[in-house]
Amino acid sequence: QVRLVESGGGLVQAGGSLRLSCVASGRTFTYESMAWFRQAPGKEREFVAGMRWSGSRQWEADSVKGRFTISRDNAKSTLYLQMNILEPQDTGVYYCALDLRGVADTRRPNEYGYWGPGTQVTVSS
Image 1: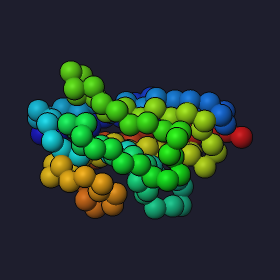
Image 2 (image 1 turned 90 degrees about the horizontal axis):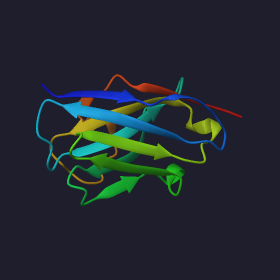
Image 3 (image 1 turned 90 degrees about the vertical axis):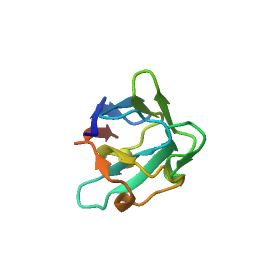
Image 4 (image 1 turned 120 degrees about the vertical axis):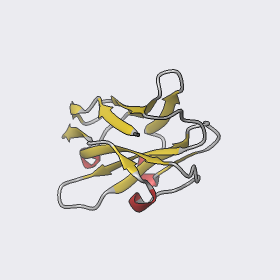
């Protein structure tokens, strides 16, 4: 059974950095697509960044370009999100998601079938 568990969230001042991790288990990952989403209070869940597990494609939201970087470590079955120059509007619960189809550039939450429980990121001004 596929399981995703995020970690690394916390409270940080604006301009600071955090690195989120998502440990994936339950299968050998090769071509699947994985992504980070976030959800602020009272708002819909929004796409942040995604990549194919093979590393062949990456895609990200315009709001995080140049500040956030998605990556993965095959040996550890772990997806990362390096977040730099954080802004208060980056605050929210960050979720790791998995799409077994491996379709590139998928950005809608309903295209991802597996989700982690989330980790809270709070950026103070």
